[in-house]
Amino acid sequence: MQHAYRQLLLGMICLFIVMAIGRFAYTPILPFMQQTGGLDDRSAGLLATINYLGYLIGAMVPIWIVMFSKVTDLKIYLFINIISTLMMGLSDNFQLWCILRLVSGITSGTVFVLASNVTLEALRVARKDGISGLLYSGVGLGIFTSSIFIFLFTTASTWKLTWISLGIFSLMIGIIVIFGMHENHNNENKNFKSKNIEQTETIKVKKKFIWGFSIAYFCEGAGYIITGTFLVAIVKSIPGLADYAALSWMFVGLGAVPSTILWSMMANKVGHAKAIYFAFVLQIIAVILPVFSGRVVSLIISSLFFGATFLGLTTLFMSKAQTLMFQGNHKVNLVALLTVIYSLGQMIAPALSGILIGESGDYNASLIFAASILCVGLLSSIYSYQGNNGS
Image 1: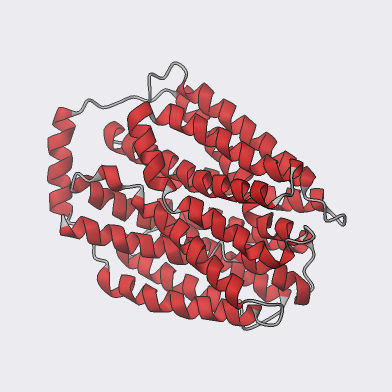
Image 2: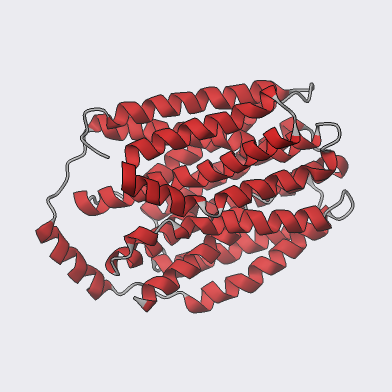
């Protein structure tokens, strides 16, 4: 039991570092980089796309290659990720940024998959699946705290120091993972599986469900990431709100922190299917709302809804994948495969949205594009559950 709780805490720290800082700190820092680094929206979208290309590669790595063990590999990738964050503040060379964002993406993907596998496995062995959503709350907590730091500390002249500071902080808490995380107890895990395989019928999942479920998660990756990349820049472009742009990302984190547990509770009460439908609807509202209103209240609601749903949907999809792996006794790592599909959407969308924004600086077309993709995701999720007898 104690081992499971320790793995959960260390898994949360991993996601705090590689997701909230390594990946998403780019969003609130981006407007300051654009002021002094010569970045236009297309270049910013390209950097994001390169990062998500790396994430795609990283999500595939654990499927094919485990060099030493899941935990040892996780620690190696975690350390490399921290160094890539630190080095973002040591140069203003665009080519080097591209390399660093690629490395950050690769290591984010590998750590996300490995941390999810190790932590969820430990919780399942300890029969604590109900708190698995806490793992992904580490991302929301990281977004919330880092955005406050960025708001208070970062200016056009200090954004490099922000990257360095975040890198040093990541290293400090990463040391806890490097020395504290250990392999799961294989014997206990095997005993647990053997007992439950006798009690649980192997569940066959229809191809219709897998296809619909996969397309839905692809659309979620493509749809959410446009707002995830440009939200702070959007607020920065609104007269009268520019000084508070970084705070919009704080509200995203505020909505994200409790969301993983709340959506897990909702899934347990009404079923995974209805929870996913509702989360998609709320996210569509969050993404499209800034198109119709630039008022402060609307932007706060949009940020809160966005934060509450993008991590919530990750929790719902990942927990379903982990359940299918266990109940169906799948040899394929479904968590990794879904992460690959998700990252494909993430990789494609920012570059397309950068083209839609173009020279005009008008983000409405890209937000409408994102909302449209999410609508397809909602319809695909409905399609996947129809006739599958799943909930």
